[in-house]
Length: 302
Ligand code: ATR
Image 1: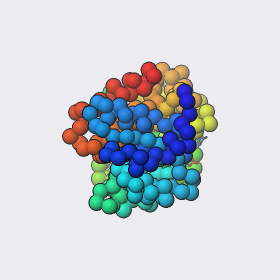
Image 2: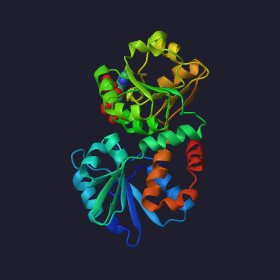
Image 3: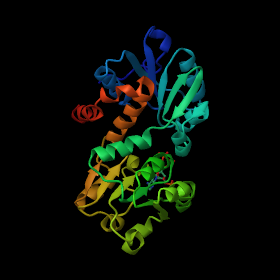
Image 4: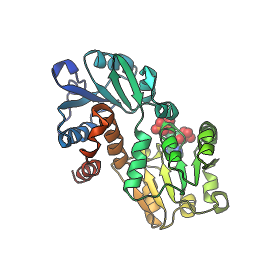
């Protein structure tokens, strides 16, 4: 596979007259699957558009995004490490982007930049598409960084019975519980934090957890956020382990597989968050024209 040149990593909308131009912005960005995913959605729904890459320097997201939109760009997906910069850039935020504390989708309308976050909705739709029951379930969310915060609102809105957050730094898990306690209470969901070591103790987790979501960055360094004692306490053949990372079977997924649990990586979440962004840009009326599960299946075999 050839690597994109630096020019290809800096898509200039003025080079595509008469065509709506979108990009994914991140650093690094050359291996992003987003251009391929959006190209397939565009084919499925007969949309004429171009979707490229943008790799701003780490301290230049704002300037790069502003010049992209000034040159006629229509929309932008935003990934690591720019989701907070994108939130700061947006003139208007959707309620779910405010709740998530981050933005992964930008669009321009009437000269204003609108920021949204489709990550949580994307993960929920991927879970539901895999037959995972969230309503009434007991969920354990590992991690308390931006990835966890991004999915908490959409998860709570599915009305699980209980949502437990565990994080290496306990204080951050406690902060997230505080931040979302009002929403959880209004939805009748028990929301609480436990320490990672408490996960080894069945009296602290009380009953079997149905769904364990790894939203930590541990997989990137081939580690699991939980030790084997916690894995033995948590995973049964009835549980489902979901890792937001994709492209490999992580140490976390291996712990679950060894105990007979079902597992999933986060590739479906990537495709589903992209589908939501596509519909935000091109119109919700195209929802029936795009087939995200077919795009996911293609990615899995490519
Ligand atoms: P993101 O926005 O991707 O969530 P982040 O805000 O840096 O990134 O958060 C990373 C998360 O992964 C945090 O919950 C972090 O735990 P701490 O809050 O204790 O730092 C967690 N994490 C990263 N590496 C980890 C590891 N090796 N084991 C356990 N948790 C880890």
